[in-house]
Length: 329
Image (cartoon, rainbow, N blue to C red; front, side):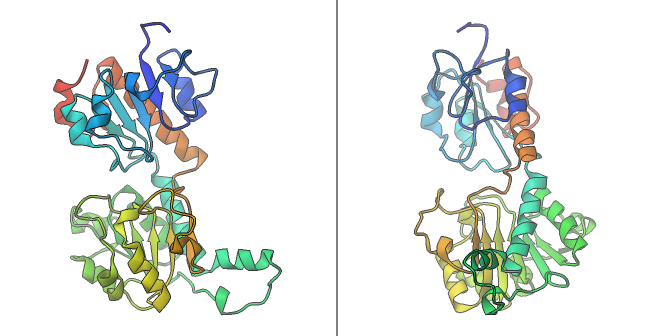
């Protein structure tokens, strides 16, 4: 393969538009790279100059040490908890993400889960396909209109959820200690000064916080008990934000009327996971951002950021701007 082109390894099958952007600018290898675009012979992460990665693999100090040519790693999407940014910076590797890309897709999915849980759509679907057409308690739902939606975290996705929720007459409240109350109010939500204040009046709780040591198990038995009885939980953010055992107990007791869960403590979730099998849970496989449009936005942005770094230009979403002068060259 020509030495003039950098080697780009991708963990994720890239959208066709991202592949088109990269053609002639990098040799590609990795899972999902079409044969026509793959370097021959192929190469692994350890030989790459750049990487585009997803959520299934950990990229830590040992990973960066194993890839001495690596100059930039792009994590598709907003979250990057599987990429150790301080370790990347210490190794001289630029770490970037694509925070704008999944906003619309994930916000739509969060609202879709609210409807699916509130109206028992998954149960009704199973019943109908099994020939059970009777209307009974298993498919009795409730209207979202005039209920209170509580948002934990108020970034891009939560702001878009707010716009959608207000259109269906949900009352929106939000708690985010890092966002000024004035900004929350300007976006159309009522700011809460604490998580307990938010929980006390929330009938639909939707999580939009990043995963960090401070937010791990943010929603456990104590927090679920503060919700009005019969509340609904929606999680499209990160699985470890919730205590899954506490959620199961709350569903069993009736404290939670239902849950929509797209992200899990361990992914993929075990096939015998009790929440996967629970009749009050709408379970999905971390797919909130998985639309053609969302993939395109995320993958094209990742490709653009990688190419910028390889040209010697600081990427717009560099997660540690201070490391740029110390980057590998």
